[in-house]
Image (spheres, each protein chain N blue to C red):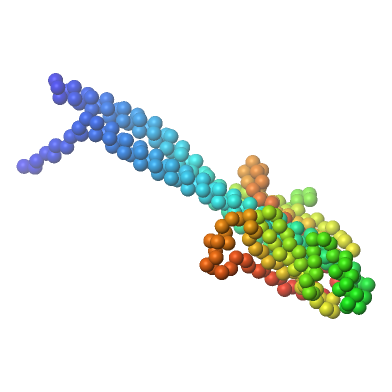
Length: 163
Length: 132
């Protein structure tokens, strides 16, 4: 004959199980909420960074247009090469300077710096611009963190030649 | 008699446990739902940002902005080019400012979320030189 199993729940056992289950669910819920919040914050921050970089690029394009107009105006005058470089150096705006055969300037928004260079080539051809982006001093500790890596900047080159 | 009392106490306890569990489950379900919603929105923003970057970069490189926008599925609505997605909407503006030796093509890509909240605005203007 089979023995009847006699499992009985003592007083308070169900309460203990409830407390355990509710606590577990509460912990899981909080973890899920924290993860979701962090994901959300990261997505928004990432979107902000993308927007800031595009704003810097926009500023660079504005200044590039200004320098291009000046360069084209001087080229249209048909002066000699020496006269061209002298006049260009003299007429460049304050934020730009001549470095060899390149016009260089910096774009900054406080946390990031975009180093821009427009290389003017002879025969009315010039490289559009070379943009070098480096992390500014405002982000403390960044350079130290990446000291071992040996590189704290990258260069984006646009080699489109304009006739 | 004693056994009967014990069973009654157990039943009352179980009833209280079930009621409390239902209450806790209601609150916790809301927490899980909020977490899920936030997670979904984060994913949408990240996806929209990547897509907006893609559109902005293509616009910057394009010779004919209108043709590109049409090929990307944008439709013109007055001065705006719009493209609706399930979760967000893209709005692109393109204007041209001629200068002495070129044209400044002012372009920006905006992304709007639900209730027309702006998620992102990417300016991607380009100066186009006119060949001498």
